[in-house]
Amino acid sequence: MTGLIPFNRRNMNQENTGLQNAGFNDFYNMLDDFFSGSMSPTRSLTRDTFKIDIEDKEDAFVVEAELPGIQKDEIDLSFEEDMLSITVNRKEEVNKDEKNYIHRERRSTSMSRRIRLSGANLDDISAKLDEGVLSINIPKAVKPNTTRKIEIG
Image (tube, rainbow, N blue to C red; front, side, top):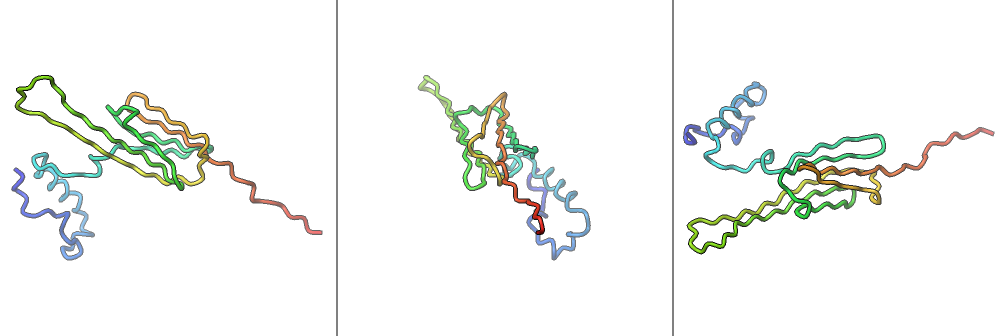
């Protein structure tokens, strides 16, 4: 089935094909995805990284990252120059005591997301991993009052 696509329309220069305003791009992409299927594994940003939600509350930012099956010792959180970094490094090894194995596999996964959050109070950031959901609470720094009424004398 993977050989049925004569060319991948996503890689075509759409300016030369006249398809950029035709409204058929999503349709063609769907067809390309259907025929390419899972037979040819390709890397995709939507499949290879974890999903995050960012909520801007009045007094804090709340970030939730979906990390099913990930343990807290496999997660590295850091905040530097208005950037929150969430990095996951996971190494799996199948270690069996049997010496006559025919097949052994190892898997190593690394994923990272960076989010710009300006105005954070770095002293009170907290994080919790619960049932595969990492919740990070980042309080906002108290802004100094920059408005002042000036009396005319």
